[in-house]
Length: 219
Image 1 (cartoon, rainbow, N blue to C red):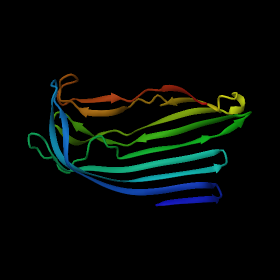
Image 2 (cartoon, rainbow, N blue to C red):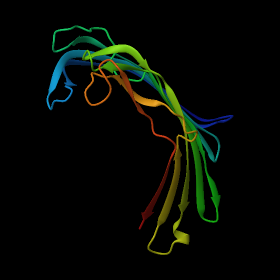
Image 3 (cartoon, rainbow, N blue to C red):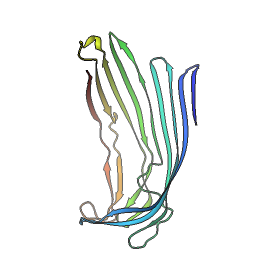
Image 4 (cartoon, rainbow, N blue to C red):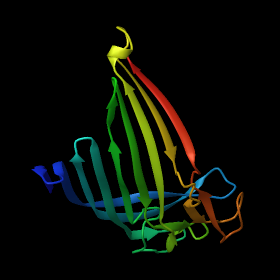
């Protein structure tokens, strides 16, 4: 489903849409790392992924653009069998967020041949079911949801200020996780070995506040 509104109040070239999907994966071979060994074991299974994607964007005023992308997903194993024959049918597929979202805006300003485009957006990752390396099976234990704020500034310089051989120069400065939020981007239950002890919950921290600068040129 898609929609478009040319002009109606604050809706200017507004676009929106949604779609539903259903995906069945069968005869899966699922690798399971073995602690302190170079080989893997394999579980077998079948899984189903279904969900909804929603998007919307608009230009409330000529120089302001707002956007949103939302996803809702459910992923379950219709069949999951461990190498030892254990059955975990019906459990959720690990490390699949229940929801994701990107919501933000950017604004364009023009001054003496230079276009400035500041942007800010919120990136959300919903709760995820984690995997148990100790039992070689999925679980219903959750990695909590997290959301981070990001911002950037793009500066575009046109040909008239650069000479005959350079058509355009873009400079991008980005700041990610502005508030320096502390969160785990990934968690699992350890089977021991290199990290932790068997049955211990381990996590990988998400990236702290970071800065990025890029330069691109068109000749």
